[in-house]
Image 1 (cartoon, one colour):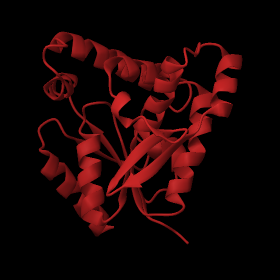
Image 2: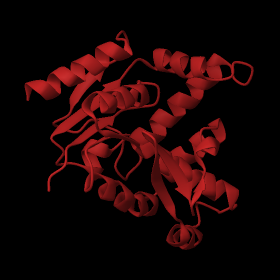
Image 3: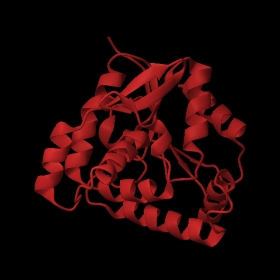
Length: 219
């Protein structure tokens, strides 16, 4: 049976998460935050004190890793060995570690099966950085969201505890992550050749969602 897969890729702060959630709700699909999987890997690497640059240590770690999504109402919750780790994967430290470890081919291969299994059983909106290029290259609907760096940094800063960060540091970290994601050898961040690119710099979330829905309905 063929299920509908919609991919939304793009850099941090482009609006992918909110857009993907609203789009999934509008279409009656499941929303899947694939970035959470990579954050889950980073969290466990940090928690277990794994040397992520050691291929042997990482191979052993990944073979024992048990990440999974479970449904709680309309939300997907990330678990590790059955324990909900969702509250612990959004810190700046885990974000940067996830950017580094996600470049490892072994990590990307280990998480591929989880994403494929979800797509094989339900309609879903997949948010990530290589959903349309590497994970679901045959998806019918592919979108790539982007925005000016300064705007993306401001958006991320507004979501954070202002006492913890300065805007210039948020922008510097985001720029570094952009560089990491775009320059990695394995599945770098870039639009799929057949993806529809949307500049969200001056658009509201509702306008972006409306544009995507219009593209889907017109196809």
